[in-house]
Length: 363
Image (cartoon, rainbow, N blue to C red; front, side, top):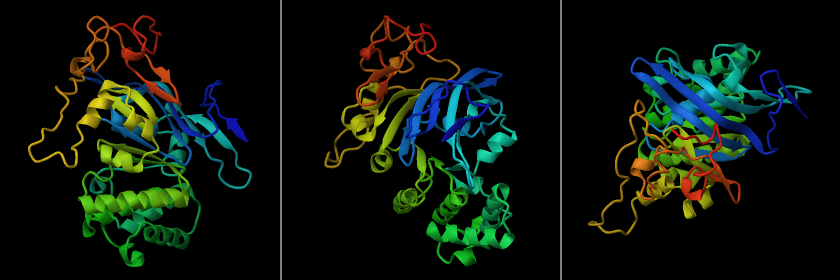
C-alpha cells in the first residue's frame, strides 16, 4: 500500500515500476556574473531495480541533477522548480511506502537527512575528496549505519566488515582499520560503494565513479555494480559521458544538453534509432573498431554554450546539422512523446507551431 505525505502534491502519482520521477526540474545558480540555469526543465523516470544512465558532455547539468535529487547542491545553487517524486520505502514491520517530493524538502531538514544515505545513496567520481582522510574506512562506514539505525557498535562493525567483503575488498577485517590514503584508487572506490550500500538503499546514484580509474579497474567496478544490483535489487542512476559504459550498463538512457533532457528511452532504441541530432552526434563521435589508423574521428562542432549566454531557442541549434533558421533559434522545443515510451525535444518531431507554455517557449 502507498500513502502520500504532506511533501507530495495531491496529484503525485507514480507508475507501479517507477521509483523516482524527475519532473521539469530546475536548479539555478544566482552568481555575480549572472543567473546560471544549470538544470532547466529536465524530466525522466528511474525504474525499480533498473539502471538509468544520464549521458552528455561536461557542463550539461548531469551532476547538478544528481545532487539536486539529494538536495546537496553547492551554494548559491538551489532547486527553484519542478518535482522530485520518490517512492520512499516502508521500513520495519508494517511500514508503508510513501510518495514524497524531495524538491520541497529543506536541504538541512530532518526529512531529507532521513533519506540521504539510507533510501538514496550516492558515490562520487573521486573518493579521496569524499572520504575523510583522518578517519578509517571502517569507522566511516560504521558512522553511516549509526546515522540511520539504532544498533550496537559491534553490530555496526559486523555490518561494515560484511559489506566490505561483498564489494570485493580483500581482507576486510584488516582493511576496516585502513585510512583512505593507504588504499589504491580502486579499493577506495569499493570502500565508497560499501558505505553507500551499508543501509540497503533502493536507489544508488553514481556520479562518474569510474572516470578516475584505469581501464581494468573500471571494468571491475562496472561488473561489481551489476552484481550488487542483482543482490540488493536496487535501482541505479549512473552519470557518465562514456557511451561505452552506457551500452554495457544501462536499461534506460537520458541524454542531457545544457540542462535539458533532450532524449530519453530504453538503451537499445536510443542507440539503434536515435531521434535527437545531439544523440546522433554523440554516437557518431565514438571511435570505430577497424576504422584504420588514418580514419578521421567525427566530432561535434563548436562547444557547449557559455551558461551565462545561453542561445535563444533550442540550446543545441548553433551546433546542429539539422538547424532550421527561424524556428530552432526562436523556439525551445517542447517534449514530444514517441512510441515505446520514448521522448525527444526537437522541432523535427513537431512543436514549432504549437508551443506548450512551461514546456516549450519562444525566447
